[in-house]
Image 1 (cartoon, rainbow, N blue to C red):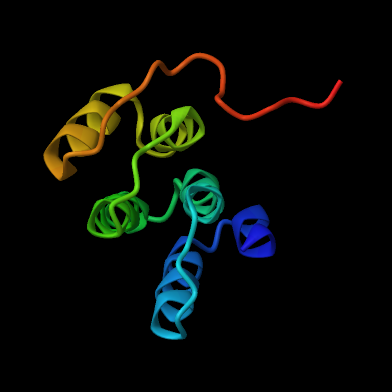
Image 2 (cartoon, helix red, strand yellow):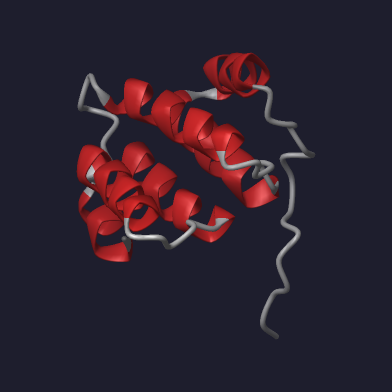
Length: 106
């Protein structure tokens, strides 16, 4: 997923998450972050916003919540106004955008 994200291959990253699920591996929020990063890298692709929405719906369907890192990735991919609307539309909680809940290396 990281390689797809680095190259901005948003649809392929989303497809890979689907494949993981089909094979019995439950994607984690970190996996969704990588796919959302691919969307942010692919902003010139007119389909990237639809991929973001698909990813958020898949997260909601899996019962996952949008942690701060996910929210930051959504904001980067589609902008603040659209990110707020998407998060609200799919029923994911929008945490505080600043910072992260993950432990940082020192």
